[in-house]
Length: 163
Image (cartoon, rainbow, N blue to C red; front, top):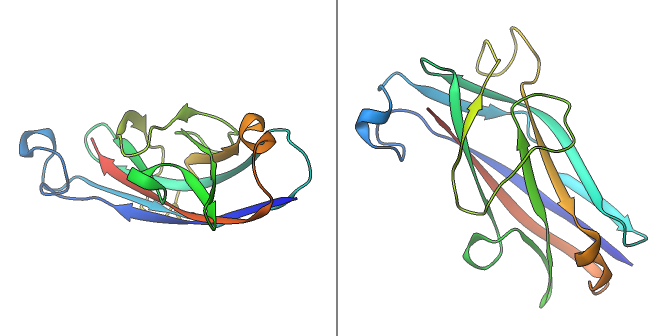
């Protein structure tokens, strides 16, 4: 049947020049995302929704401990797709600002989703909660029903920006 896996890459944003206008953040504001791991769905025997969730450390050092998340896939225009030769398989990306979640806010490729708050006390979650957010990747049944058999792979890039 179908199998799928992909690599997740985190980017860290900090300082004034990191994508937001100067008035939006102080130079001392920093954010860091750690603890991400690759996702391997393995062989998918049926057409039911398949999800993979992981708890990660999302740290924000700003007045509000707030941050935004931007996700970009390896598909055309940054779309969330896995590929196997010419065949593609779309997936959804969900983010929650609490650990141990299996859902959350659905992210739109290339669009910053703001309003998240970090409970992390230290940038790698070594002091305080060991994780502070959740990432869920979902292969939907409607997509799986029309998918061609193959080994699918792709890359998901996650960027965290302090608010």
